[in-house]
Length: 486
Image (cartoon, rainbow, N blue to C red; front, side, top):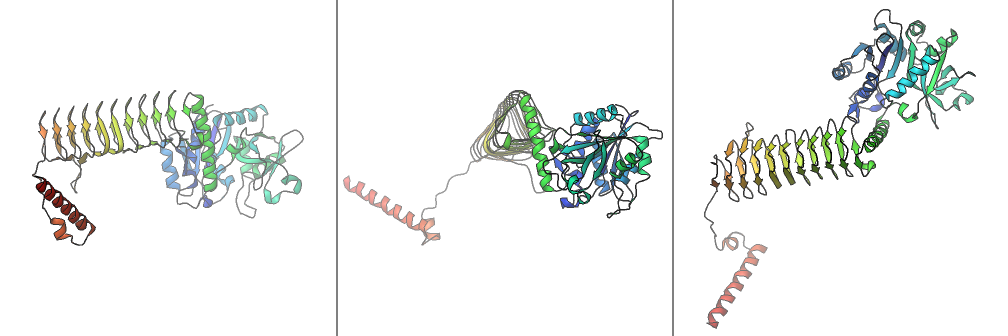
């Protein structure tokens, strides 16, 4: 479908007061995209290069979000309120002479899939209708406009809840707010829509009545999944839409060969990519543009945001954002990988380790209780427990460079900027302030001093002083006994 026969109009001008948010309703996010982003993603697959997005409330924020969708052109709605006016300004913004079909979508209805739009267009063209509505069947249609059909199955009118008779209110087919029109009749009908109603708005639904009164056909097709056709108007509906989308995404990956043991506690964004034979364990989230390669294991209780995970890597009970995890690397439990963390193949970041803006070389290990920030760590390195790269001097960040096959003793502190040569070692508790040559052993050695009696003198009356006094008395008694035995 090209610009020659299809234009797409997306209504995104509403304020969305029920969201109670400073963020425009259509920019709230589920599954890795904004609500509007989901609508644009589905619409773009239809192949039209005529996409108009009607904006008004928080106009600049909504327009800025379109930078990711260069095919979408914003159109400003004026002070005349209503969906009818929004559709009118969008149609006026189409090229002169356009006489194809106009697909009208809502920016707050994010779950309708491209195939449903195609079915709607096919039915519209098969019936040679002037307008076709996407409807939905609901067990409880309360609050929605009802679709009233005639004996031939064509739409006779749309009746809002407050205007419905008892018989009309019993109808379970509702209007989803998604339509396709022939451009010419739509233009003509919109010119006849007024604001003569309680809300003083131009209603797009009035077009259906105008077309019927002119003897033109209005059809309807029911959405295969009624839940997907419903809009998001508040935070409750936002959460429900997120849940429905996640169920859909999780099921898709399961059918693609991904093991997901507990779909109820697993969240995967629609923007993430997983390879066959990946395993996602309970309580895990794979978010943003994260990619997980074949055979990798994520979880349990793990969050990945915009990460790359290599083949057969394992990430357990950890949190990572904008990190690269190489093939067969292991992370966790309770690791924290921040932006710029890059773990080479076969490396290890263990329990209670934080890595930020650093490269960990192939086969290197940061096993536990360490902080590695703004550092380059070579291949085959082992950093002992409690290693710290002290990268910040209260003014600027500095880098630590650690060569290949370096071994640091426990509780080594590297005061950046500093470079550790290949094969070098550090002693336990060393504070490294100067570069260490290749193959050298760096130590911070100071004589140990024991100040006998310090506790009794300086902490008299405390439990520690009493315990020390008892221990010394016991040692004296033992010494006296040993002397007598001699």
